[in-house]
Image (cartoon, rainbow, N blue to C red; front, side):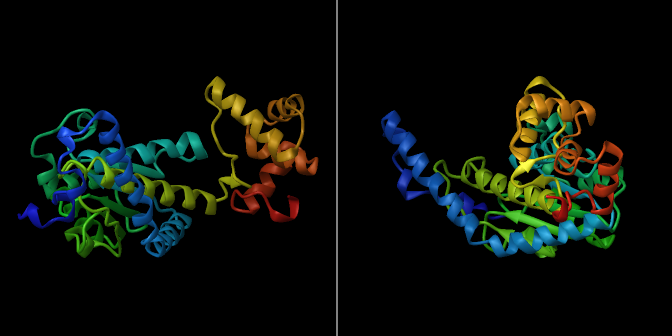
Length: 296
């Protein structure tokens, strides 16, 4: 292993004397580097686009999206996966995140976990991976053995594979049908890939999951109409979403939501059409969960 050759391990000339800077200069230096991340992601939008289409197609066939990673990359995958159910009302099994070392690795470094390809195979077997699923390996360095092992195993089952890294010609790209290489350059602190590389990975993961959910009908206009109102904040958001969608008062929104058992999408459709809850459910089922354009 020659880490010195990796883009993410290089020394950044713009932060060479950061240990001698004032606080505001430290922050300015970090902020200047962060501004480069979105532009790096912009360069790979076409690759993200075909990745989204692949994941959506596989989900239409009953497949799942499985993120695998170690350290920061693994945590980001789990974060993105865990936010899909409350935001879009999907089954928690639809988008899953696996991290080298298991749940304990979310808050602590598990020595040697990322160096085992076999651990990834075990983790994927434990969730009963099938050829309908898409496995997305995340590794800033592009070389994590845990991720490589997972991608390699997924391909033996006939799965579609995606990889996200922040180096040129990442090793994990070789095991991926849809490689995404976001070149963010040297970090402010050399090798600290929780910074620019981590930000880039989160941006890409947000794009992937959000775009897939939009295509699955989880968004009406730009509103998350399948959110689960499981607390007071989300109940208030649900009321506001119905009000915005129908241009009606909050009181009317509450009436619709109560009648529709706080199912936001059905409440909106009922408000648009005057149909009862059962008729709205049938209309959504016929249109794969999306509010039909003819009823908008």
